Image (cartoon, rainbow, N blue to C red; front, side):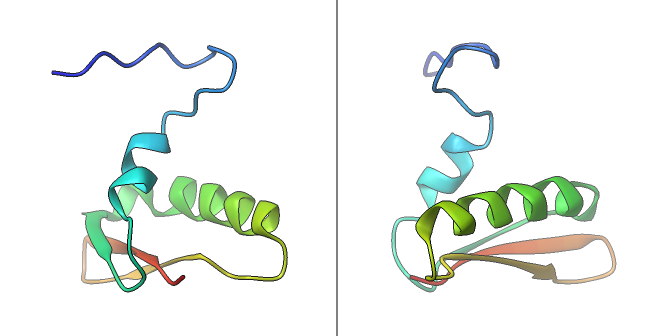
Length: 72
C-alpha cells in the first residue's frame, strides 16, 4: 500500500489519487452514488482551474452508482 499523507497537508487533496487514475480522454470510473455531490464539487473546481476547457464530468450510472469521466 502506497503512503498517502493525511488531508490537510499543503498541496494534497484526498481526491488526487482517484483523478490521477484517469489518464486518457474517455476513461471513467464507477463509484457509489453517495459520493456524487462531493465528486461533482471537486470536478467543477478542477474544471474552473483548467479555464474554458471542460476536463471532468460526472453523471448517474445506475440506481446507486455514478460515473466520473475524463473528457480531455
